[in-house]
Length: 334
Ligand code: 1CP
Image 1: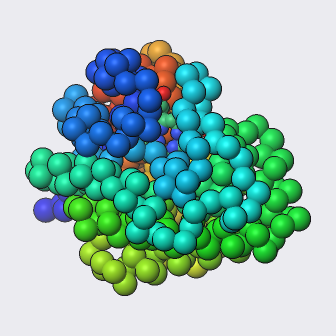
Image 2: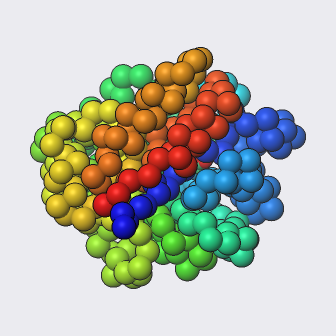
């Protein structure tokens, strides 16, 4: 008899603006960070996509920018504009001396995780943080940037200061993840969304080493917690990442090198990904075809179905439903 296995599925940014039930809560809560710090509402929002689509993973509703907030930076989310931070130049511009104090500022998040843990049933529960370099990018740029000129210059001209800040962000993120695990997360994902900005030497120092440190310390703390890494935009450097950083799951975007899936198979690393979220804006049968293509591409791997980046706000719910149906109907034999 064939050993048939199903491909589990969730979507990055599965809770958010494409869902009317999210918008209903959001319209009554203009302060986005305060919404993240409201355990009752944040847990309700985390569960919205599960109730609607019966996905396999719950992800905590929060944001990667709670870390700069915990470090005393001003973080605002302006309407239709994204995040806005008072930009900093040095570690002297933040409060990094007492991590416990920093974590107390965001401790409501752990209450959200406890609520989700109590309600999770047979689902997995994902806690997360930003990759240290991605968090540093927002702290230096002061928000979303098209050119990333400030962070690139900062890393080149102030390497020591950049390394000091990276060390602080990395160590605080590790403590933050440990508390999420203690509160009930059985998976954690590290969103290194801006991994693609750096040259090779900088990639090793600012992407590989900090992510490696996070993995090692988290595995030492809790060997059963599954770690998902997402070094978005890494292109050929995805291979170095997979070689150097311990991961249970590697999330792939559209830039990964062709030979990577077979390398991951040999290393026993699960592939996560990688349907282009742009596809979910189209009409017609293309969504089903593209979903099937992704399933076929990774059928020899252990695979968690996901996108190559987060769901876009204009995504049609009917398209999400189509994707899920194709994944649920698909059976692989391993
Ligand atoms: O207006 C709104 O309602 C806020 C929209 C929104 C939402 C729903 C933001 C603002 N963040 C979130 C939630 C969020 N962010 C989650 C929740 C869990 C989920 O359902 O997946 C997660 C995991 C994040 C992570 C996050 N925030 C990342 C990493 C992933 C990625 O998209 O690359 C980044 C870069 C952020 C920063 C951020 N938060 C929000 C915005 C608009 C941005 C900036 C994005 C940019 O610079 O382009």
